[in-house]
Length: 221
Image (cartoon, rainbow, N blue to C red; front, top):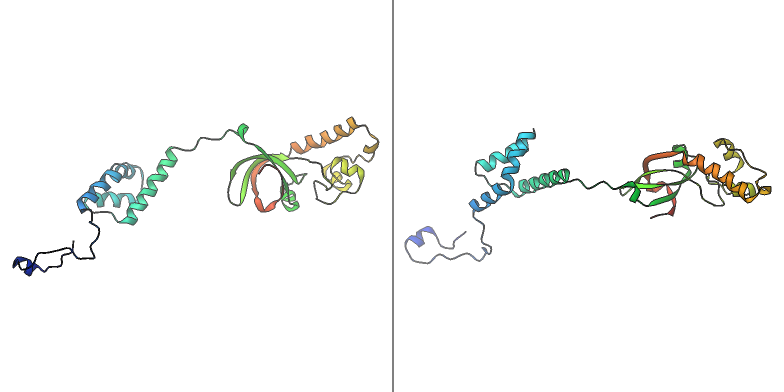
């Protein structure tokens, strides 16, 4: 602590030393700081030095052994390292896929073509999420709509509206275009749609889905 009196004046007993107005907080004695740092970091550093080749840990241990107080930056760095060690030793429990809700997205045509899928509609479960993407495990899917599920163009033919694909996209996917579907029974129509759905469900994937490529969230959030 700084004193307002000079050493000479004190020795002469002319004035009594008093604290300056600038000194407001009592500083923790250096030996107390060192003791606290030894307790917090000492054992951890000893164990770390035995398993790590990182010179930083060795330097920190030497400083403490030589009774040198660590700087605030050193303390922050060590606390971060200890926190990371704790996270690695106590990893979060894996989530069971069965407990994850399903989501359905309508993707942009570019992404669908790039991933060689027969439908812009995909259904799956989000395994992980970042700011920009979902790690999705799922498959191609189909939903009712007035647009072709492969190319996204508006459907005008009644038969195309029933199955969700135009004649050209059916040919490219290897699906027989059912031009006579309107004269078929309801049961037969459902059977044709089921065949297409089974085909799409075989197109499985586990990949990162960029949020920028999602045209519409049909189901989920």
